[in-house]
Image (cartoon, rainbow, N blue to C red; front, side, top):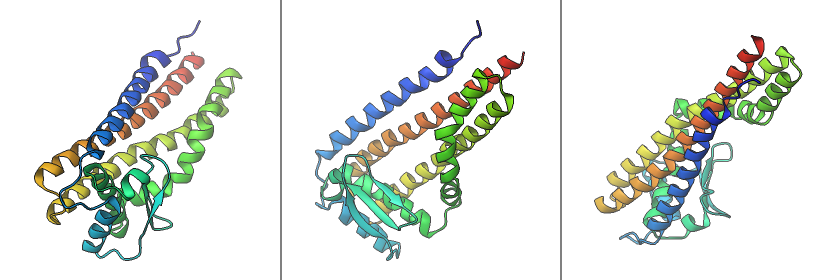
Length: 226
């Protein structure tokens, strides 16, 4: 009976992902209940930061759900979830500032963001079909199919890895912009930092999970060749 390293490699990262999700939700919930001193909403904060950076071609619009905030570089739209768009809380301003950080990255052609955008099709195909092709290759003892699956999934893993500096940089820009623009007090910035740090952990967990899944497929591939 061959050894499947799933329990050793993948399960711990899945547990980390669940912990990260719980942490970001609890931290966001905590700071969503604390109103910022200037009483500005996430949408207003985003407008201020974009104006400070001479960004005039990005539209801000609400999107349904919670923690569904994102910046769409193709459409040049900043989409803020309902708890962020119209709420004057520390969490709302922090999340809106983070997404505005992506808009600033786009305006300045931040290299990792440009690279990540080009990898989106590869990541979508690789994450959807790569693991299944690899598993089918193992089951049918078809090395070419196995290698193709690993290669495709490797592209998706690269996307997850490049996402880390993009997200970290967006958070750093958010904090710097909120500080230099005197949008929040130092105490409020501390709350924003906690919200963004919790969110960053989810990206780290996702990247680790993808890496461990890829490593698992590689190890299974090698064990089949022995």
